[in-house]
Image 1 (cartoon, rainbow, N blue to C red):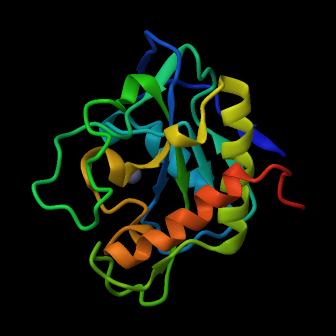
Image 2 (image 1 turned 90 degrees about the horizontal axis):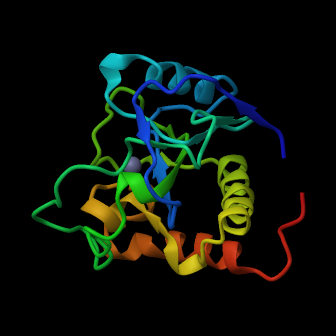
Length: 192
Ligand SMILES: [Zn+2]
């Protein structure tokens, strides 16, 4: 698995403790073509963004924004809990999973109708090649940092945010999350 490592630590902090959670996100980008992950990494490198994530995946590439996972943490899951939850998983890990004890993976998304970019739109999706790379990367990180599948969650589990939106905007969408969880737990790694 080829991972392009960046070198700067803008919008990250000193990590006081080993990571215990892996958090899956979507970028809310309207396309996921090659180069999208790099341009999001460039956005994280702008001090004005005030946000970051350890990894970003597009159709072609995995970019590691945080060059030293054990030394620094990204600003990806902070903020308060949403007052209303779209699914039964929303906010269930709030207070336990934080920026300082987690690793975040951003999946680049795509959208059919690009004239509207509302989080409530139903035409956001995660391309298959992005999901496949997300499974492989998650498995690799679970092994490397000794993180069990029970500690692999969506951003949605932390604050209730619709993230990744296609997997949590309503209860029925959780079936896509369960599919992902099944794949990271498989005894033998996925082919390809
Ligand atoms: Zn998120």
